[in-house]
Amino acid sequence: MRKYLFPNLAVSSVLELTEDRLHALHVNALLLDVDCTLKEYEKQEPDWEIIQWLDSLKNAGFKLCLLSNGVGKRIKPLANSLGLPCVFKACKPMPGGVRRGLTILGAPPEKAVVVGDQIFADILAGNLAKVFTILVAPIKPEQEHWFTRIKRPWEKIVLKSFWKKFPNGVWKHTD
Ligand SMILES: [Mg+2]
Image (cartoon, rainbow, N blue to C red):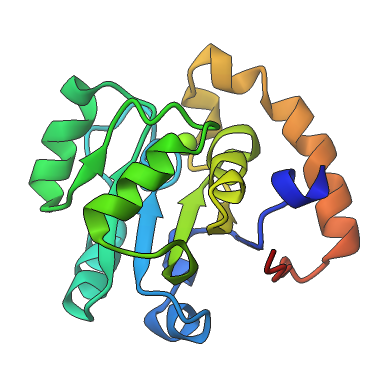
């Protein structure tokens, strides 16, 4: 169970994922969840710092793709304004959307990371697709869809055991 539900790395925000840190993981492609990972659920756009972070990674040669369970009507305009490709209706926790994102970026799974705020969507999808998974603390989770909120208590149980075992938030399993 742990193999599928634990992230490989847990951080408080995407802003902690610096170029150096990503280089140290030997990856060059990022599949990024949108709601509560890059922006507040109710906002149209990410905050300025996050947009800066996306731009600096792009300029440094990282390949980025949005990976959202949201509908195209909501995700495509955001992807266009950020100048990024996207996978919408990704059906996370199923791994198909992750694989679609890898294809779009032309990246093998071992060179990519999945970044998201939900264990039972982003992390499970990434782990099933055998991609390195990075959990971020959700931005304003109180705005989330009810279906996401009802999953949070279950996530807490998983996370309690994760932090107990990996107090520094790092678990680099490879298989
Ligand atoms: Mg999310």
